Picture 1 (cartoon, rainbow, N blue to C red):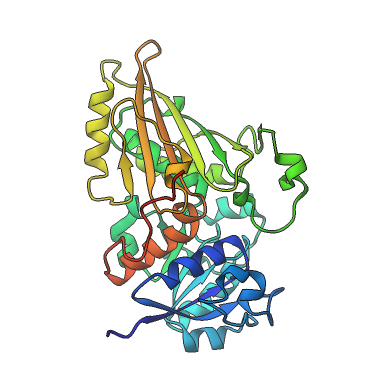
Picture 2 (spheres, helix red, strand yellow):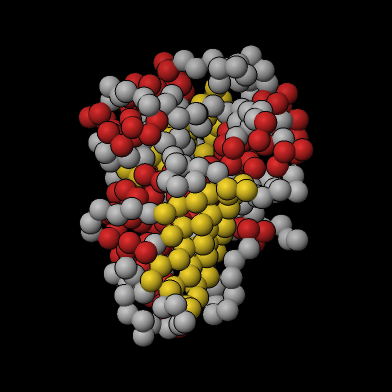
Length: 351
């Protein structure tokens, strides 16, 4: 049996951390040798998540970069925004591969990051070497990198939906609108009044309206690169009273009003022909979050409204898997030259 790669998780106590534990335990080529945290240090992982007791009971340790680098060949940073950039430079210098699940290494332009996340950075040279962790768009760059800024959950669903339209010049870019809904797990595990059942249950509302959500500049940066010129995107997120899942709906005016749905389906299938986790649905079938729950799959449906000359693209993912931890594992698979799908679930529990 080939020796497995030793990996660690920093920030293991949150939803991203526990999803990583589940995925890494099922991965044939990886072994978890370290889990670290600040507030949870000193507890066994099964104290936080008793359902894992029979399979995983490592002690959560203080965050010690020397210990991490000594044990781990690759490290997943599942931390709040603004913390990974304080740890990654030392880990990279010590020879670790780093996969950051926060926003710290997602931006090519660090001035944009600073403006939105209010964090001054001292690692600009390193940040310039980071690769945006959306495999379907940046697979070859990920393969050559040791530092990945994994794409955000809303961004993943939105960008996979809109990328073929921008790359092929099929829409008028200024008309693009993204309307997206997320389950409550997207807000993390820390207690927040707005996430209480009494607040969020039996209700449905928008937040981060009028370009106020932090994923807006991330979406815009990648869209601008795809389109070949600066873009502004109208992005509106919503909280929907379910645990997990994102449904993103993209609206845009077609550059050629003669295009029909079958044309676009052909284009989408060709664009994602080498992307095993993107499933383009047949004509008239539109994705549901339940289909993606617990998997690393993105389901995409396409429609054309000939009355308005608009294309409508719908994208469904699990925000904690394809939108977070599964995406990170997918990136590591690519970095290591392993099959992209290795250790990642593709079939949801249903119903």
